[in-house]
Length: 333
Image (cartoon, rainbow, N blue to C red; front, side, top):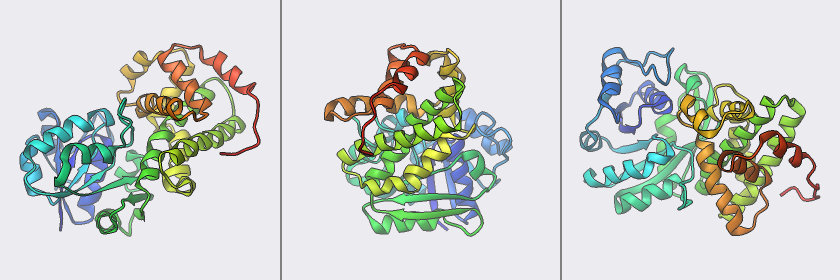
């Protein structure tokens, strides 16, 4: 049995804590708010995130970060991307020994353009024994009810990725593969959220499956162009953390990003969308992706379109119509 600190009691953190418990480990679930911890410890629920789910009674929630870290041998970070740096700063203040860090958060930090693993190493420093990205096509709602899911543990440290694989892999519903391309794995998980919003926009405007397939394919090409510039292996994007994650996020009503796109198509602005859907990672990632496309002079028309819709209040229907008139080029990537 391993003791794992799970930082973040949202839908994904709670689902992964349950998987750890199913696998015979002890998940120490850290909550930002006391009322969240009280609900988990008393009723074994997280109604704001997984309203239909009752968690395993063995999962205990805490608000004392120092205690949780002192008891655990590894740290699983599952807080929203915009909170990762602030939480890691708290971790750095109380962590007294090196530990393996596993990030299950998908995103790119605004302005710094750092991936989540880079933020962890940046802030926690030499107390990061190794860092692993746990990512892939997954909805917390399905993992929480133990439906079959495949993930990837990506790290340049093969022992750490193997350790993570053993933590989460089981014969019932979760299969974990390994990869050394942590850059590609993390970028795939972040950039596909952008494309999922755009697919939601198209569906919201009344386009059909043909348009969806075309956009997802062209979106994948954009993802690869940027990721290759940033040091990723393009072949990573043919696997679970690229194409697989894009499919699940851009085609499901579980997806917050897809649903955000529907709302944008129906005339809502960013502020209105975020009042109804609290975490839409693609709206944050698009800023970094747009900035990086300009920095490296990479053609990313879909990313640019979403940036203009969200941050420049451009008309959605007009931009989509203009996209369809763009000159086509021969190259795929």
